[in-house]
Amino acid sequence: MKWALICGSSGDIGIQIAKDLANQGWSLYLHYAHHDERIKQLISEFNQQYPRQDFLAVQADFLTADCASKLAASIFGLDAIIFAQGTTYYSLLNAFPTEKIDELLTMQVKTPMLILQKLEAKLAQSNAGRIVFISSIYGKTGSAMEVPYSAVKGAINTFVRAYSKEVASMNITVNAIAPGAVDTQMNQLFDQDTLAQIKSDIPVGHIAKPDEISYWVISLLDERAGYMTGQTLFVNGGWLD
Image 1 (cartoon, rainbow, N blue to C red):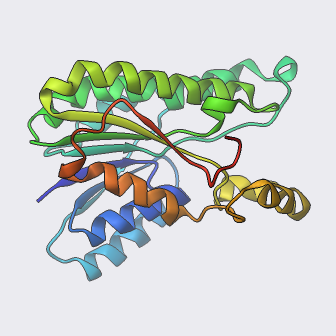
Image 2: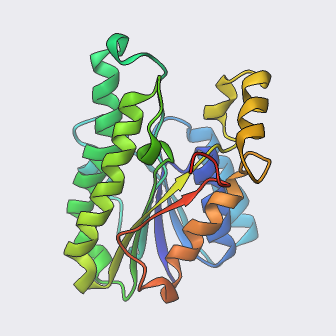
């Protein structure tokens, strides 16, 4: 039985990834920071639908110093890690609070690196270890009002290219999925006029559903995807190309 750790499994994309992997027979470590009720409900549903698989909740705050150690202590067998945690803040750079810059860097770059330091050996025991980051189109194009967020996502894309070279001989692949606009709670901050304008700018004509992002994550976890590594796949409907 294969095991995947989904970091940020209480978010919209994380939940969809969990549902798709559970449906494919994976057992899951469902990481969350604060939304314990959402994870309890998800595990209850999974236990009813997939009684031969295991689903374990793992609580850890990516902004705390002991996060990597706490999370790693809860992980035993491991074949894949998906980093779907993350958030953004909207502000001009000259007014961006220093603590928010630190939060973005810690949550999306520093803590994942520390986690991988501790879990690399366990992933190496798999015949087909997989690491997938959820990045963003803004890691390529950049976005005004989200400069630190864009910088962090660009750093993830570069990390993927570099780290993939270190672990390739262990049969571990490292890739990123960079969505465009996705129908998630994070984008509910925009009003309907703004969302309509974004939709009109997307060549395929709609904002992505979470399962349109999860599909590519699942594809990268397939054993036949072992020759794909060090890549960032832009899943954006042609938007901002």
